[in-house]
Image (cartoon, rainbow, N blue to C red):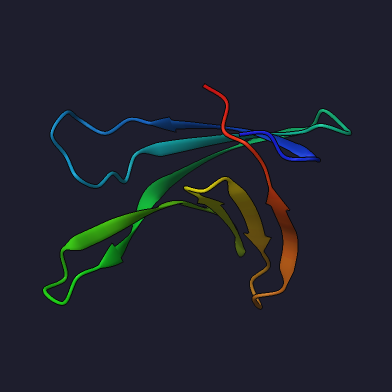
Length: 95
């Protein structure tokens, strides 16, 4: 996915047939500085009444108290530990 300021590469390492994954890799690069970060995370779904995964929303990653959310529709949101929005950018997925 590419936004104005970042390029994000998501690698989902789930095994065939699995609905959810806790083995997803985030590789993010600043388009301005070239600095990068690699994180491990999970995919992200709504939860059904019985606790089963529902609609796919995207991916979640943590680095200390910073949360990185990559939405299925192509949005990158980075939140501080107190919930302040550090980044909120819309981009396009690249195949």
